[in-house]
Length: 101
Image (cartoon, rainbow, N blue to C red; front, side):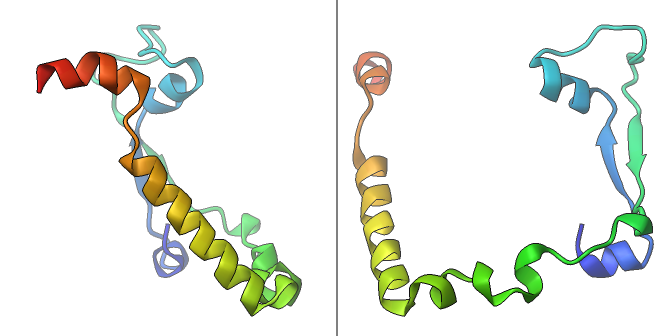
């Protein structure tokens, strides 16, 4: 939730069955969850407000911790790895998807 919405007392909504589905991986037909699957209101709890560890500590920032040269190089390597990964066809894709093309 964006900070401004949180501070204004905004709310989020989520279908009641989603948390159960996230835990079990299956849709729940338990009578606790009605067929109408109503929304659950998620209201902000102001007692839980705290700064994230990286919001005020410079040690968390990778550039200040490892140096600009290292972080720039690391990001370049990861960008190449991602491009290579996204261009590779997996064995599953080769077996099931390519014959359909």
